[in-house]
Structure formats: C-alpha cells, structure tokens
Length: 112
Length: 112
Image 1: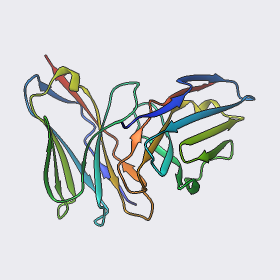
Image 2: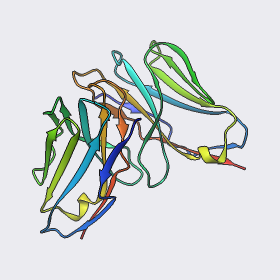
Image 3: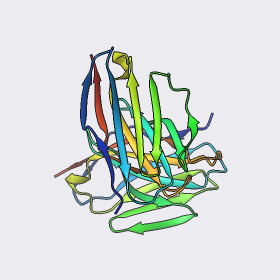
Image 4: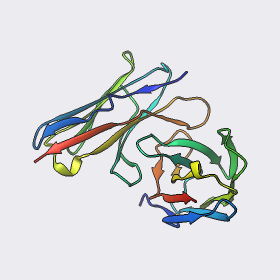
C-alpha cells in the first residue's frame, strides 16, 4: 500500500484566516515533504522532515509553518496568506530520504 | 545550477504507437531517477524508478538510463488515450537529503 492521504481536498480562505493542511501516511516512511504546485509548473519543494525533524526549509515565507507531530503525520499551518499563495499543496513521503517519493492527492488552496 | 530538462511538448502519438519521452540532467553524480505521470488537476503518480545504467521494464513502460550521457528516457508501448497526461522527470541530485529536482514536464497526447 503506497497511500498518502491529505485533508481537506479543497480550501478557500481569506487573507486574515488561519487554517491547517493535514497529511498522513501509514507506510512506515521516515521522510515527509511539502510541495507547492502552480498550474502548468512542476512541484516546488517547501519543506522536508526526516525522522520527524525539519531538515530542509527552502526559504519559505513564515506565513507557512510546518509541523510533524509524529512519524505518520505532517501538518502545514497557514496564516496571513496572499492571493499568490493559491496553488495545489502536495504532501509526499518516502521510506528514507533519497528513496522514491509517493504523493498524496493534494489540497487545492484558494486565497481570496 | 542543477537542472533537469524536458521537452514541454505536446508530444502527439496515435493510439497503439510507442511514445518516447526524454530527459537530461546536469549533475553528473545524480543517483536516482524517477518518472511521474500527472493528469490535469491531479497529483503526480510514480510510474518508474531507475538507479543503474540500462533498461528497466514494467508492463508497457520502459525506463532507460545512460549516466555517461546524463540522459534518462521513458518509453510507453501500445500507447492508449488514457496515457494522455504530463510526464515529469525527477532526479535526486544526491545533495545530502532526498530533494527531487523536477523537469518542467512533457505533455503527451494519445489520439484514438
């Protein structure tokens, strides 16, 4: 089973709202990732967690705040977003870093 | 700058033909190579991974890797209209942690 789940599927939020995206995997993977994807562009890496520790932050603005409560869960907390942050947010996981990554279905975020 | 290059397409092939998708990468020490399929509005789906020179076959898909030429390709035999999607080449640039560098993707259109 190579399933990564993400909730919600769609999210509309105002620029003053606070919301969270959730990601879960039960494959025993020890690396988890957040990506942002705009239309007709490849995924852009935002954060990498390896063994529940933040290992990479690709210079993402502080209005995006990741959290890894345990080895199966990954959250992305959103606050004071801008309309240009509207995108598909993808979570992925891999057995270890450097292994093949499996993506969840994504959360389609619209900031109004 | 480490890059992955793909022809953006679209690549148009008739049903039943062989589709050939190509990818070049700049970092000679790259070790892991992946092909993802992405339907419009959906998340990337891993279809092939390859780690050593030569061919790797899985059903109608064959991945080919030539590290000396820094070239990886994906062949799809007996192409079907359901194969119409964007194909993303991803390379692990072996920079410590598993950070995939994606090409911009090639759109494949298979006509009935």
